[in-house]
Amino acid sequence: MVHVKGASSGKAFQRFTTLDIVLMAMLAAANAVMTVFLSPLNQALNGLGGPILTSTITGLYMIYGLLAYYIIRKPGTALITYGIGAVVQAFMGTAYGILSCFVAAACYLVIVEGAFALVRYKKWSWPMLMVTGGAMVPVWFFFAAQMFGYTKWGMDILLIALVVRVLSGMVLCGLLVKLLGDALAGSGLLRRFAAGRRMEA
Image (cartoon, rainbow, N blue to C red; front, side):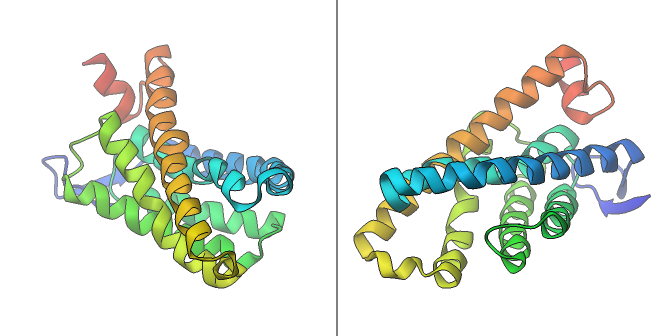
């Protein structure tokens, strides 16, 4: 079992169950497969509208870790999920380079873990998820700009792309996580997870 400190329960420590780990691994693997299909879409959007249009799908790359957190609701969920995701993507291969997998994962998990720690793991509303989804973008955007040469776009394009990516993170990551999570919880598939138990309460 993996042990992490749990602020939302009355216990000193919470345990990640085997089911938790399986879910995190499944979402990480699904993300790696989705990324393979998103790469040609990203290239097509780049050809049609350059960096601005490609920025519209940014949120989809981040969704798996936040969805795992929303379902499991235990500190450390983002660390494990994004970590597994980075390793899986590295093994599967990526058009953006292996280093980008780990740097992006690190940027995402720091923001997500920090955001839910600030609210003591008690807020799971759509505003909280949308703010978190948007907040995940800027740190990785800074590193990506250095790694992939975004700085040659010019400051005006950089700022527009950043705004579009933040909005994409809010909608295609944050809001979509809320919709997917609640739909799964309502179906009864998440009875053994915190999101499912909260729905039944």
